[in-house]
Amino acid sequence: MASENPLVAVTCTAPVNIAVIKYWGKRDEELILPINSSLSVTLHQDQLKTTTTAVISKDFTEDQIWLNGRKDDIGQPRIQACLRQIRCLARKQRSGQEEDPLPLSLSYKVHIASVNNFPTAAGLASSASGYACLAYALAQVYGVKSDLSEVARRGSGSACRSLYGGFVEWQMGEQADGKDSVARQVAPESHWPELRVLILVVSAEKKMTGSTVGMQTSVETSPLLRFRAEAVVPARMAEMIRYIRERNFEGFGQLTMKDSNQFHATCLDTFPPISYLSDTSRHIIHLVHRFNAHHGQTKVAYTFDAGPNAVIFTLDDTVAEFVAAVKHSFPPESNSDRFLKGLPVRPAPLSDELKASLGMDPTPGGIKYIIATQVGPGPQILDQPHAHLLGPDGLPKLVA
Ligand code: DP6
Image 1 (tube, rainbow, N blue to C red):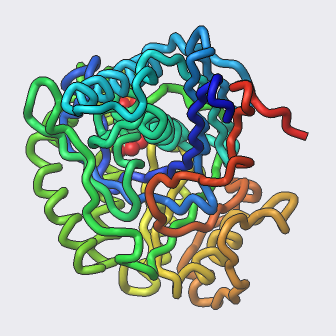
Image 2 (image 1 turned 30 degrees about the horizontal axis):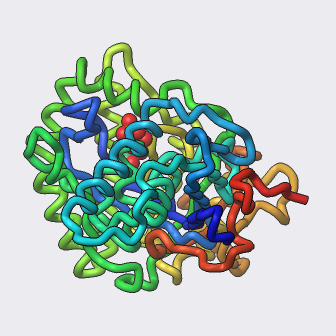
């Protein structure tokens, strides 16, 4: 770093999260304030993560962004909202300080590059990890120390929950300015070491209705959504936090499934109706209930976001048998050696009793692949200079 060319570069990673009490609906579109609190599990970055480099320099003439290697539009309203918010926090922090360690940095333009280690086309939500990583990286380069919920939230509501590892709640808050609408860790990633997460990738198609537009229509038209936000979610939040603290899988799993089902019911109650689940999604729901009925207890639980992919929660001692049941019900069509990604899963036999209990005709190729993962930590800073996605000139490094 030449002193005549002061340049600050930081690279961070941030995780994906999956909600077990769903966020659906805003009370303020501009500030992205939700109509109910929500709760999520942070997934491990070994399997799914966004990496973002932010560089500021007095020599840059404009803000610029590259997403997955391609120049993108920095003018997008949500990216702009994040940038405004971080600069506003930096200014506030600075006005409270005697001496400023980075005197001119606030006026410096920023170059941003961001990549996901998972295919966007897989239909897995990338906005949460993406905006959490953006908020975290910007905070590092501009020296912002305060809570970043507000910055991440302005990018995508669910992104504020990706600022922490483990189990995270997003408290809806009451204030009109959203200052109390913040994410908070309920339990760290080490809290429930046996918990496992399987992502069943059903379809790589782009979703029909995006979350932002979908929830807007739901807020306008679904009486069930209003009832859910006011009369159901507050008690469920308290109940879910208790199950997590007690590591009670029976309670956690059942409530996770009920909340996913209610979210999809509000989608169907939206007018015109929205349906995110596919036939394969419904087959997975059926499979999970049959599997649990066979065992006489809740051994696995599903949840679905705004798309057909299933996210399954289970404990480590059940993973192998459940994966065998999935393979039996959805025989992999091709590349069966690449059907399982992520954490290793040992092959397990399926008893004839369980096969009979599942009672389904196999659907070959219904599930494209499975990503096995677990609960993971929050955003990280990568110290090694080679991790930077942008070179010393502030432009994307050429990837061999
Ligand atoms: C179904 O956070 O993507 O995944 O705030 O408009 O960007 P915006 O929506 P987004 O919605 C996520 C919806 C969900 C449930 C959840 O993650 O809580």
